[in-house]
Image (cartoon, rainbow over all chains, first blue to last red):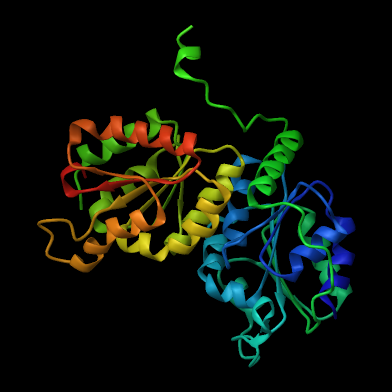
Length: 205
Length: 164
């Protein structure tokens, strides 16, 4: 199956949810399919689910959070699965693409290439009970539907060997992406997050 | 393992500064503080497996308007350099870094980590203050949080044994 087709199948399921993607083709593909200020692209490899962990845990009880990474990046922060398993955020869906390559850096093989690692099994044994490996687009779609209702922590692995689909790059730099994302949360949750510090002279009046 | 009084002072400083969430990786010298964090009802405590993960957790909480701190040893600072650079600094995320200063003068272990700690913070462009006076702990925590939020960058406090 192809990642773009998977994302096409998932996109209609994602309504107001926040979506974190990592560096690489998945970000451009996702933003082409679901352009939204509720998307944020992470620059640190392996930190997608760590960034997604907290906001959905207590800060925004009503928000759902999805993160998309790849096996090579998950491997860089494999302990994140144990952290998710420990904290059990009820509305985090972690989607991992098993493309068996370092896609952005030239397609070199990864630890997943040998086929000896069962990432979904690792996630399950780290405490993420709803973990599965999808072999088809529909399997992945059904897994995401299952994770969305009711709220549960979930890890889903999508195997694919497709090349990234040519998609326009994200329009924003990190700062604009961050501020738009925060404004999106403010609107979604009806809360005020960004505050401009007042000068001391103003506060003294 | 630190003292209860030192840990209480730091926790009080964190509360006064409005810190909502602390992520941590333990060090024996911060044991009392971490024990207090586990029991505390006001500050969310998120233990993680590796320090860089904590930077991600703090960044995520910041996106939701939370004031955050990362508690770690200076060896963990070295582990988290990429996350600090490509997440905290690149996205402009304020985080209070509470770093136990292993390898400080008088410490017979971790001397190499101690020697590189300040140059690493300088290299990252992260403002830091060394805490040696228990009487100034709350004031310095408050000041560091104000600076982190106004500059939208991490600010570090190096915790010596004198304040723990």
